Image (cartoon, rainbow, N blue to C red; front, side, top):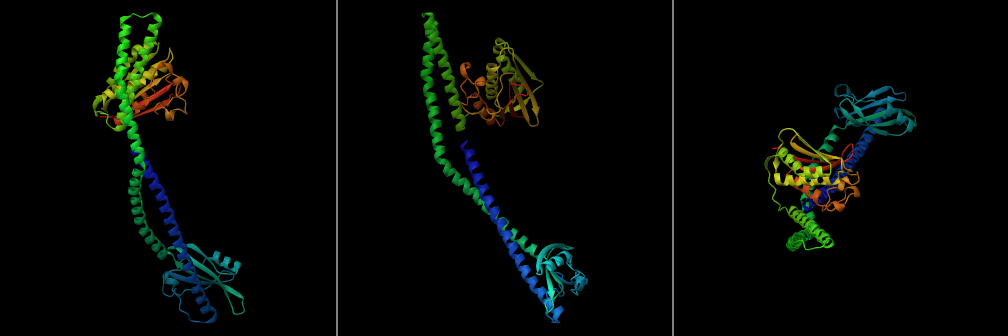
Length: 417
């Protein structure tokens, strides 16, 4: 239990750390991408101005688009018709220019606008800038573009650098979290060990006086020198000592389960024969209450586990069923093979288990509604908890659910041989 809590704390810590790393990594990549985009826009704006001076004022400024497949430019008039373009565009491509939509936006806003468009070879960053004569009259639009393949390659390299760093940080967080969770759980572990040792020692020490009291009470009843009233009191004391002895036995079993010191065999056996024997053992009690106990098992159910512990689990389930099913009801015990499991199901027509109690039905000492509480019918409140722990110790599981037509249904799963 504590080991599971330690791992849950570690996974929770690592999950939070992973979320922080993911957030910081995404922020770094997005921030770097925006910075690269701003640099692209600044460069493209300067290049567009140089081309504009060359076209309008006859200057001969050198531009990056000359002889480069990474850059390209076009000039449009105010109607959107092409008036000039990069001379090398015929052989190296136009990168998707012109973009008439951006040209209209630049004219409408009367300023430079930039955007990323989809070109023939991928994503392209484009700036669209109005062209003015010296008089200030707008005579057209200059568009300058650059392929983003280089930028995307740079961002990809950044991600490849960040990814192993993030994985290394996450691994360090897992080891660090496991270490810190172990230290944080140490006081709880020590307290739990002291509690477990106390329960085991107290239960063991109390067994002896209870056994003596039970023996003395049995001797008094055997002699028969009691009036009816005294005999009733002694009978009651004898029954209560038996119940207390069962509680102590359950507590000792729980302590050994928690300490991992309970011997649970994992050997091949036939679950079908165990089911049949346990059903026969409880058949007399069921018949005395006019309860029909039916066993439906066809063929062998080869499993790997502990037959004695399996008998103990089935005894808990059948005992509960017999105690809670009203006279005239029925109990059905079935067995089948499901994938890599052998499954035994105990289904009854009793009051069932309400939905709000199902998640806690296996908690130790948990009391469900009065209809299935232990009350006068006996029970220690530990039976189902012990049964599930035993099932899991054998590599299987025990689950509870409400039957479709009322009653309770318990499914025991054990690994097939």
